[in-house]
Image (cartoon, rainbow, N blue to C red; front, side, top):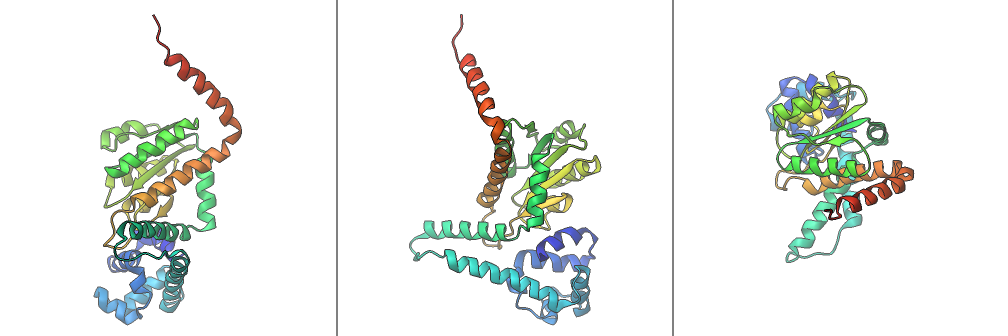
Length: 276
């Protein structure tokens, strides 16, 4: 898929090629109907740069690249027409819900079976999981970490400042998984944490707003949810993906859950009893 190809190759692109990658990652619906010359004029680069960019992504030329972009857009339009609700201009709340559902469906449609299998193996085989995020992403990271702990997974959500991350990742090693959440903007502490974890042999996953976000670029695997410039940050979509990951882990641990729940129930009763 073109957006995943962009994520993987982005650090190796030239400055002009990164300009093309940034535009396609955010405005692929417009790029899908542009010729190579028009795209070049829009971004003030040479047409030859556009062609070399397509080849850098592994396509024979620009027609093959734009065909993949068109396939992405057409898939989203088909999904949207199937889910479209009959709302009018006065039903802003329902329209917003439709938009959230549409954005989620678009994001899910970009997850290839290979990435889905890799994410499953990554989380279900983790010996320890560290979930990091800044700002609103930090709140989501805390929810994911707490949810994993209720399943018996050793998980933590350290402060996303340099000291907090240093303490949490000091002993990062193979068997660890570091999950970085980036809902909006550039989150360099999170991206750097993912990069450091990779260098220490840990596995990494990003939940990010774009395939060109620093966190997505630094992670081994990324689940991305690009939105257009007029929409609010994709908090609900990323939160839904995050919850789906937790539910997946819960399914893998289903046999052990009744015994664990019984132990927790007994301990909760003990801790909640007033004692002399």
